[in-house]
Amino acid sequence: MSAPVAGKFQDHYAILGVEPKANSDTIQAAYAKLAQKYHKDNPATGDPEKFEVVNLAFEVLCDAALRAEFDKLKGVDQDGDKPKFGGAPFFVNLGKQSGLRTAILSVLYERRQLKPYRPALSMRHLDGMINATNDELNFALWYLKQRGLVESDDKSNLQIAIAGMDFLETTRPQPELVLPFIKPSALAAAPAPPEPAAAGPTQSAPKGDEPHEPVSREPVSREPVSREPVSKVLTRALARR
Image (tube, rainbow, N blue to C red; front, side):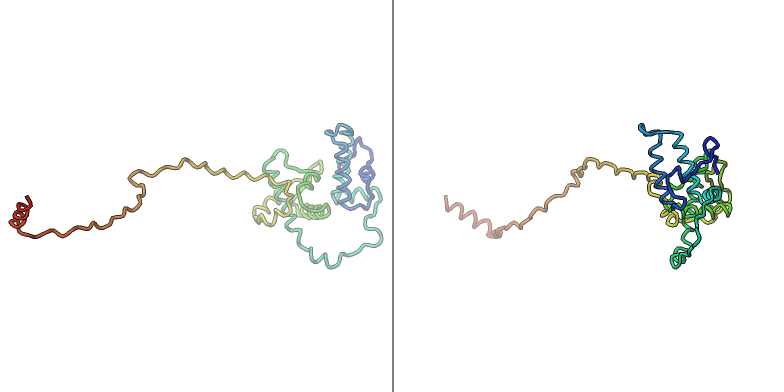
């Protein structure tokens, strides 16, 4: 677990203003409000030291293993005296986390590939990318860590292990299994399709190829040619003179 600021005991529940039995969604909402308040970009209430304290509280309480360790230190019993079984919904949801675990591995694999000198992601960053509740995310990470597919660095940040890379490259999961568990805001923008080329000026057809309207060709009527002898024609002509 990360060391408290200045080496003092830090009550993470008190820092976030939530009850020890608060669920993950309540913790996340409280963190978001305080992080915005103390962020350095807030000119009115920005406080880098308090921001780090809030971050530490969130990173501990949103990690199931770290929270359980802190609860033991604080003396908190999350289950109480009457634990209950979920009933029918348990069987409906059984096995659905396979896609979630694969999505986490895919995110961490790409991070290792693109940022080889900074391959780890904090729990806060991973929570902002993965489409799941904190409880679902923590359960999936517990499994991945137990299998040796994911490991934590000395700052409790998460990174893929060699076994996790081998698992992805061997199984080669399909996008439809992984993408539903990635938040749309965490997806890189797809490249814009190329614009269609502008249409050039219309070229006129060569003159020899220009279409012509059909020319009406009506038959020319001809009078029959006289077949009289030449002598009679001359005699008739002389008589008219």
